Amino acid sequence: MLNLSILLEDSARTNPERAAVVLGEQRLTYAQVNAAANQVAGMLVARGIRPGDKVALSCPNLPYFPIVYYGILKAGAVVVPLNVLLKGREIAYHLDDSDAKAYFCFQGTADLPMGTEGFAGFGQVEHCEHFFLITADPAAPSPIDGTETLGAALTGQSPVFEPVLLTETDPAVILYTSGTTGQAKGAELSHSNLVLNALTCNRLFQTVPGTDTHLAVLPLFHSFGSTVNMNAGFATASTLVLLPRFDAEAAVQLLEKENVTFFAGVPTMYWGLLNALTAGVDVERIARNMRRAVSGGSSLPIEIIREVKERFGVTILEGYGLSETSPVATFSDPNGDPRPGSIGIPIWGVELKLIDELWNTIDAVDEIGEIAIRGHNIMRGYYNRPEATAEVMRDGWFRSGDLGRRDKDGFYYIVDRAKDMIIRGGFNVYPREIEEVLMMHEAVSLAAVIGVPDPRHGEEVKAFVILKPGAAVTEDELVEWGKEQMAAYKYPRIVAIVESLPMTATGKLLKRALS
Image (cartoon, rainbow, N blue to C red; front, side):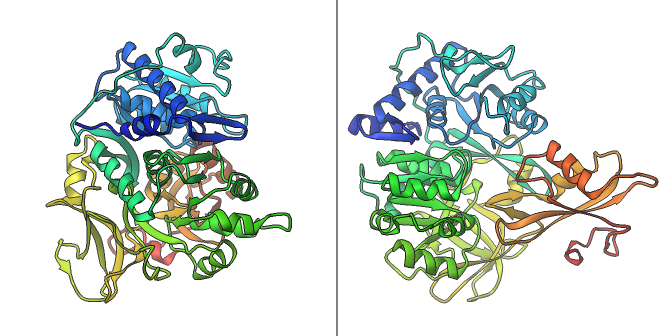
């Protein structure tokens, strides 16, 4: 029997007064976070949520995120974290596809009206019965008519709750990940998937319980942030200093002020930190405290690795994984050769190999193949999608869709992303979804979307559009329309209106001819 919430429960028992989360001047201890999560669990059970029910959560990096996340788990339900940038139409899809019975959504800001978008999406899904608006001030009335606030819902709830124990292989979290086949799919991760991935990370990072302070700039709704910062951090009673939205100058100030020892980020974040080291920053203090720095999402330029080592005194450990792998599958060895450009070696309990299209193993050194992964970290499958699951899983192995090679010492390297996936600022963007949305515009006849190099985000989304006969719309107008229809990391910042698109002999778009 197991419940992922044991990571919070155990630290609340052993380190009740240690700060669990910090946001500005707000500091909550492990005892306080655990008590609040108990209230969430009790409220959910009182509202009819049963073990195995799905409960969605839209929230940036605020103390509410772990409180609600672990509260859902304590009730025996399954957490469905949603990207905070999703629009109402996209939220409705995720709530419907996951069979969510309840939905917690932060109110947002004027610039990012999450509550309004969330409530609009909720209203489109009949089976989602409960909507709880998370307000910045828990005592404040709801700013959205017809919604119940989390603060009101928790009134009178006991801070004591006995977590529901489940089978280790029962689902704990559904993480949505798109594919080149179109709509997002929910990767079902079990309690043992996520517990073992968190504990293995701490073993790898050589974490001493009760000593680390994380700067949590990675979104906690994302698999990287939720495992490496939150679950792994809570497993060792680490303190999570939260930054709701990455800002390099604010991050540097927090590294200095909060004596941060652990930083995890994508390459663009390290680039931002280095560029934010102005004259007033005590870089020596940051370097004295920094114990570990890790990166994932895309390959780090060697120059950034060198400069981080020079300025902060740490060698960045590079890793690799996917939502389907909980997510960590490989990492650099902290006691060995970091091999810049390499994603490292498999973590404890995990195997990697290279395969061809027919699942045949590729053994030759430096020969390119698709990365396949097997171990305790592999998902149960895609929720309600047995055919899609069968396409990527065989005999316990999961085929990643990523092309790589292995050197003579067993270190792996990513060569390319299979098919057409774009990685913008660490987020996966899938061209087919963007193309389908663009073609909803009344003036658009055909669209092709690719990724183009971008110094800040790694890749930028570019759309090539053919207009319908007689239609009149500008490229800038299509950018603005896309911004209204899609999450901020998805919509194309670059649109080119063209007369034709390159095609193969069979009529398929020849995207490699676009640039």
